[in-house]
Length: 379
Image (cartoon, rainbow, N blue to C red):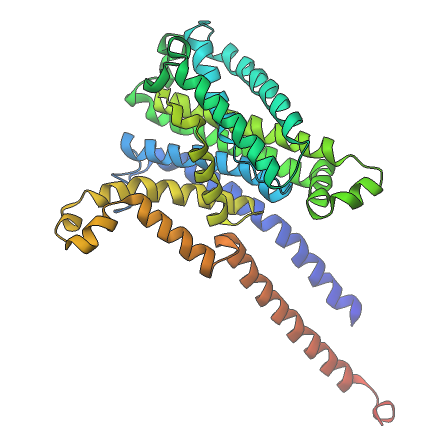
């Protein structure tokens, strides 16, 4: 009886591991063909999925999903609360923009050079910030982000200052420039978010990821075992920064430029909200949080300016006309009633259901064994 019940359990275990990969692959295929379909989602997309407006909105969602994935690698895997992750995002956007405009490098050359520059920035800031942990670490990263924001705003000739940095389209292939090529930009951002997901997945399942998780739980024990928690956290910090920089480059191409807000601490707080909303420690939760927050941020702005909101009494019109107020209320509700975020709540429900099925199976197994026992044994 034990042998026969073990085989289905093993099969179910393999199926349980293959199911998420299959669903993920199917989702990527669906996202890849969306620009070729005529699907309308009223209230969420501004038009059918093949129109430039809808493609631009979905592309922006994927950019921030990739950014949220990179931040989840910091907070969820390594347990590092950073208030300066926007510096890596801005380093990618501004680094690529400056190389295209000032150095006049072609896009294919500027991207790897910008990644190397982002790597240097991450190593410098990470090696300093890692000397402390907890809230002091968060404050050091915030200081670096603020310094980067000041440099961006004060260097008018290089970064464009408060007006932002425009994209040097002469150095970018024609198929990535203009509204008519929004479909190509959509596919590019899809490639970016898939690439970032695969990198994060590799880190989580590698020895580096396991060491980072152990450091998050008990850094002293890791040191006693003769391992280097500092090196593990620094490597995770650098990988997360590179993923954020890649998302920043996609943002530059999608928006045909970038602004100082891409380096501000406000962006880091926004990404933190995305991760908490989706569920800290869950890769698919970070994606859901990034997409959901971006959709709400964009669509609530349209709703706030609608005639229906204008017709409401002043006591309702004032708060409902402010998208950030609605997002703040949503975040408070999630923290209060869904402390594990969307993914954490779903995971807890699935675990409870599996636990109930397992207990029921064990009860049935005990009953069947009791029936199979000889009468004299039961006596």
